Image 1 (tube, helix red, strand yellow):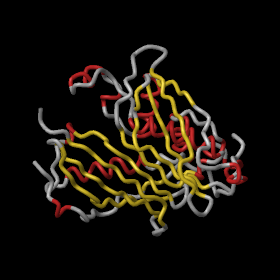
Image 2: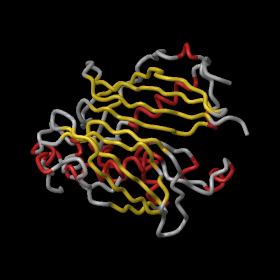
Image 3: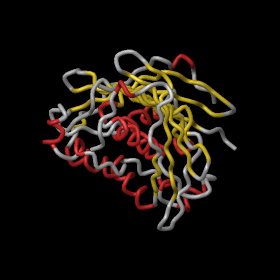
Image 4: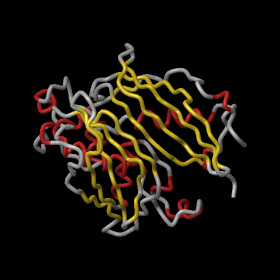
Length: 142
Length: 148
């Protein structure tokens, strides 16, 4: 897939390429089926608004998965991501149109750990608002 | 109703065996838009040093979220699941999940907390093969929002 990043080329402050992912209602349906999370707030406006949401929202785990994909593709290896955590701060509202919502993932190496491991801090936004907080991945590079 | 701090450390029996299939891994990767061949192509996965196709790093949620959520049904926990939202998630991987794995998931309550009328329940789900090889831990913090 993408070229593997070399640990020797990574330091505190190294930035990951910014990624922008479109998330449509069809993507939510696909993720619901793949993950088994059939909560109707991710596909029914009626249920979403009845619990006080502005409308259908993306699964937090879909947003986390997309940000994880950005890190994996930078590292060149999905197995490199050995620890990964997020806090779901704000929902990604997905309109019922062909464009959907945009999720933007930025990342920066924050700490050099031992054993070829690096802590990457992620900034994940939608519509200019942060949707994940304390989003951190530990990546082991060769 | 605040959760009893005595719940911390409570474990539950392991889940039934979850057998990881190649098609499920491919479906999950596609749902994240990932076309990395290590998720899709056995030959590519083997060339990268894996015995079979490997799952994306958040795949474990497909088996662990329902296990973490089942803790809510413990009569001593008894949160209103219709008011539960996913607050935080963490994964620690010992090795990638791969096709052919036969996994069991064992939940343990790691923390309980009340904040602003909401109950916060943190459950660590340890995922291992049925032979006992540790694969990953998936820790979910669920928030039961207070009434009103």
